[in-house]
Image 1: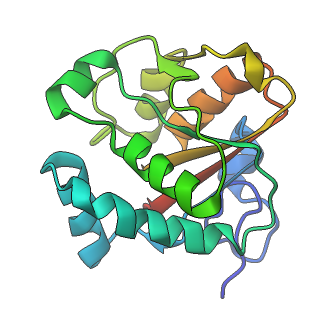
Image 2: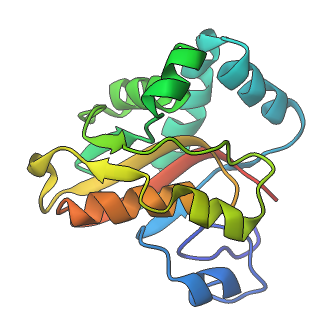
Length: 190
């Protein structure tokens, strides 16, 4: 297995921290995705996210749970990346919450589905360049649960492209008092 950045989990050229994480210093303590966002998995995630294939939540969550058992972190609670109410109404469900519910059940960890809120509607991250993604989600999230103080959070999402959404969520969770924020996604963009 090629070496990975200890922060974002992307493959590196043998260094401990990749150039991007060294420059940007993400607010999350670490992020991982066991698979690349390509091929059959990409199609499955698209069906799950955009075609109401909610039945895929369990098998996708099983991939996360399997990876989680080998990732040496300690999490107190799972938190899904939230959708804005407008996007939730359009889609009918939050795919990250469905994944998090399944992982919580499999890993026997508590779920705090409403502690992180998307307080500002943002345009879709799909198609935006890296800098645009960062600007798009900056300040878009807020922690709505003071009970997270001094707790270790495991943030769950389907795909990480640049890490901008995960970073914006981690900023909000740490402002809310979280001791650490780890992120786990099914797939990561190459």
